[in-house]
Length: 512
Ligand code: AAO
Image 1 (tube, protein in one colour):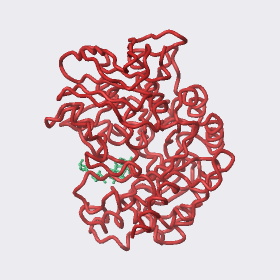
Image 2 (image 1 turned 45 degrees about the vertical axis):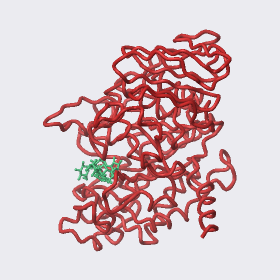
Image 3 (image 1 turned 60 degrees about the vertical axis):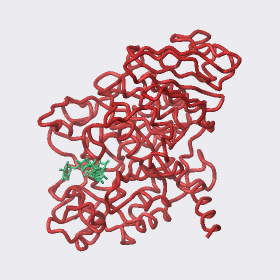
Image 4 (image 1 turned 30 degrees about the vertical axis):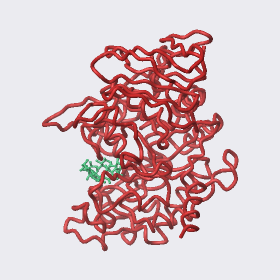
């Protein structure tokens, strides 16, 4: 038994759980709906130089194209084939992006939609991103090729053919998720096609996959696909490195399927993280920031080595998926910056930062009527490039949270404190807390409605540090608050509850 546990642990540390981040980098960013050409530029001009470890890209394969101007973002979750042309660009642009990002130490992770093809009502024709013909009605996708033999409908036992009840694991895995044609991953033929698609991307140089809708696939089927995958391209990655796999399983408890069923296959998205932290920072349900002293497994989250964590994702920032109104997004910038800062300072999980586009929210009875809106686009439906303004923020409706000074600097903070223990906790029994990461970094939050005025043990060597939230170190100057740490490691902090960003973060690379 002991040997089995040891082997299982060893397996965890060598297999698909390792993101293969390079040069001490620790975070990835989801550049939701960005064009490949823009991501390539962003790797070279911003992500590489600022210590971002990787990018989660939108699905790169051929997808349905809906409407004449309509084009919802979610059309990309309706595959038509595994040809590599999408709203984000062509195969050659994809290849160029992967190469250029890899060359500056930034990994690419592909959002892999392998559970299903397009919706059953997707019609017949060539309204697809590479122009391939298909017929959703007869389940014919000749450019894969899949035929009606390759789908699960014969196994599904609901009258609608859709998932009707999440307490029935057979429905969840054998029926259609919101009418999407459900692939029969039990067939070797389907497994081969899916693996060929993923292997092509691995050979091009991607570092791994965010696997979509994993709850809706049997672990055994995913294991069979996983065994077919190549090792990473040795031009950029160590020999024998396996692709990093992080699986989208929404597990807030209370359903037939739970996240641990997938732990052996890779990391899993921890949806409790953003839902709980949003509740804490909003101070809903009598939550207080001081309760986060045992944040992580102590809050009932999955084991650290299994978790991929984030504050919001492309679904729950607009009411899809799970988490509801508690989820913090760029629409609440003050609390959002604090919660992303908390996540990046805290040692739990592999961290993913969200980068969004604006849309016109229009609520009717609490539901956003515009939750479908796609990325900033030209009149013909093609996605607009991401322009960078002189102040380094993005234009044309691209939000670029990852470029916000506070968030960018906390991505760097996480790299600087990588591997250091969680230390020097302090709280005021309410919503003022502080913690350190060994002798490399320290962060203080004031989410109360009064000032924070305290001398705290930071664990840092004595000296003058530049707060990377209110400003940053530029040359030998500090554009923000300066924090004086004594030779005993203690420092005085004053954070007004009216500050634009009521938190302070210092680390050894921002010492003056
Ligand atoms: C679109 C249309 C549909 C149409 C379909 C086909 O909106 O009306 O039928 O096309 O024509 C995205 C969009 C969908 C879109 C789809 C295809 O979000 O609106 O459908 O593209 O274009 C479930 C899945 C999870 C999934 C999530 C959205 O388990 O995998 O739904 N996320 C991924 C992607 C997502 C994508 C797809 C999958 C499909 O990230 O972008 O869809 O490729 C419960 C379950 C969850 C379940 C949610 C929502 O959650 O636990 O597993 O997620 O329900 O159905 C509380 C509970 C929480 C619960 C939640 C909501 O918070 O605690 O557990 O309430 O009830």
